[in-house]
Amino acid sequence: MELTPEDTIRDLRTLLIEALPKFEFCRKNLFDYSLETITIPEADVTLDDFVIGLIWNELADGDQIPARAVIERSHFSADLTSEEINIIAILMMVGWV
Image (tube, rainbow, N blue to C red):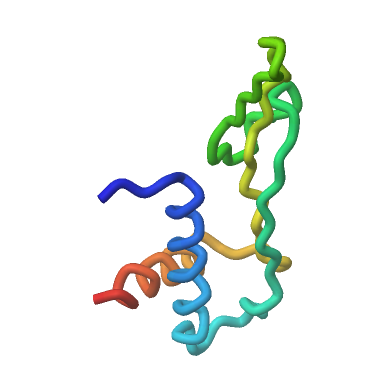
């Protein structure tokens, strides 16, 4: 089975949201987060952006519209430590077993 980038992001978001309540003693508010996917002109993509895919459009007369990039910009409001990130990643992995 082949997943599209959008399907993969949707599945990862589901795993993340289901893993958060299992992190029992986190000192930060893990439920203060933003899930956001945006579409921007390809020329505006930065090195920090997580690109899900590119969209190319062609007009009826054959002219090309500049490519647009689909960017994942979800984030937690609090800065998480690498230990907290690793715990969440482990909870995401064991959550589907």
